[in-house]
Image (cartoon, rainbow, N blue to C red; front, top):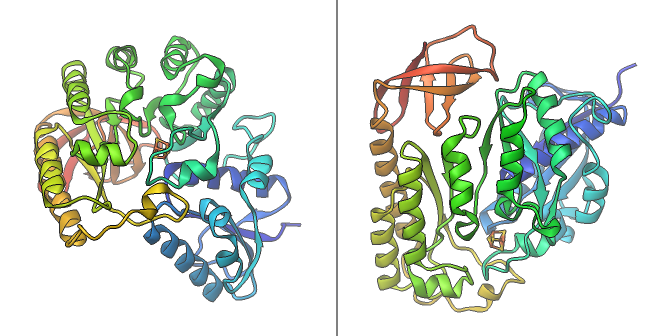
Length: 411
Ligand code: SF4
């Protein structure tokens, strides 16, 4: 007899998405049936929401999602977990339909032991067509605006051999690409005297099939020459680096407690473009932090224009209670929305220039759907319908690039 229907919904970062997949596995192992299509399922008995709390907006999205689920499934029991549930449990518990808050420790105890592979997790429940593999957790850094590292604790890294076994398992499930995910991926293995470079070298030596590997965000000071060397010489790794800048003004970087200044960042960018000339370089910038006056913002805009970024995430600062920056006055910031808008527009221009460089050229891509593929260097390409299996790797030729998007064909 089929078990009760459960719907797992995630907000926020790739780590949250990876944890949502583990939750699906946990529910299946515990006798539940996954709701296939949220819009058509009338018999959902349980909803689990993994919440994000990185900004005020993330909190509001998590709350809105819970309210929406309650309206759609008024009889379902809603369980809430993730960073939001740990930071503001009372607020989450007071929402309609919420019957349980699963805090950080409990969540870690339940889902961390789960592994992709036959022994402990024989059902693959990844709803996307690239897998996000959680390889580590935590961060000891204390950037003054960041609440997440204060919730998720110190660095704990999954052992290399376990990661390799999971990569084999995901490969045999047809995944052409796996994204390695951790809160601070560049610190992987540090607690055991290992390093991310060591892990990538081990993956590179593997003779059994493993999927193409993409890395999530790397803090600038963790991107060593050796790491860039591995990425530059092995086709197993995507030429795609996401390296958060956060501000292009040294005074603000100091306030943020970031361990680098623009000079070092710029040096790193030179190295990346020299060693990986076709790589997509993404970054994060936070605008309108307390103390970001007109001059600081102008310096950020100028620095960002000078850097070889191709993909930008721009966030407007919002104070997170419990962080040092939350106690600082933000009187100097007059136009937060305009600042964010200006940087985003600049980011779009840079993305267009980057994509144009590849017009008429071929790239390896993972099929996200019969009409959509993502290249190794992170270009999202609309393709004419293909019958090749989604999740697999294909060669795509880019035929047209516009400010709005990229079009191509499967070769
Ligand atoms: S490195 Fe990233 S996760 Fe760690 S404290 Fe800074 S912003 Fe937060």
